View 1 (tube, helix red, strand yellow):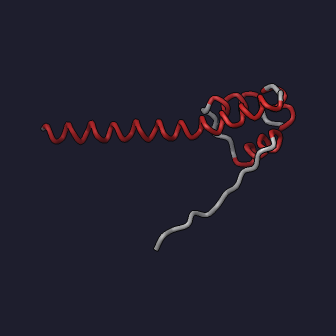
View 2 (cartoon, rainbow, N blue to C red):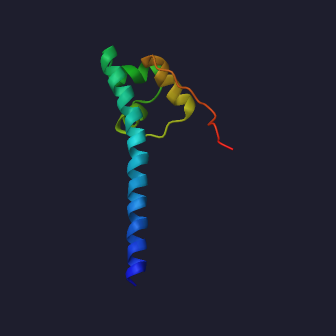
View 3 (cartoon, rainbow, N blue to C red):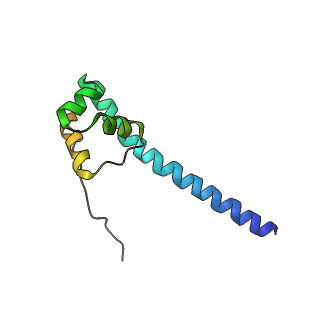
Amino acid sequence: MKNHTFWLAFHLFLLILRRKYDKSYSMNLGRIIKDRRSVLGISQQDLSDYSGVGISTVKDLERGVGNPSIETLQKILDVVGLEMVLQVKQTVK
């Protein structure tokens, strides 16, 4: 029973760690956009108006809870002068 409890606790720890990592990744993107918006001196409403993206989407993205499409994200990044680059990962054979 001890062994089973250990593995259950271990898997729970990994799940929490993964969720924390996933959330921090999203929050970093939101933080980058928020910081860039701040440097440009524009409000969330301005960003929404200039990009054509809803204000709630902008707010969610900056809080790290949004899940925008690539098209929506590209509209926001264009306004704040950032570029998105997608690459195919290199694999080792």
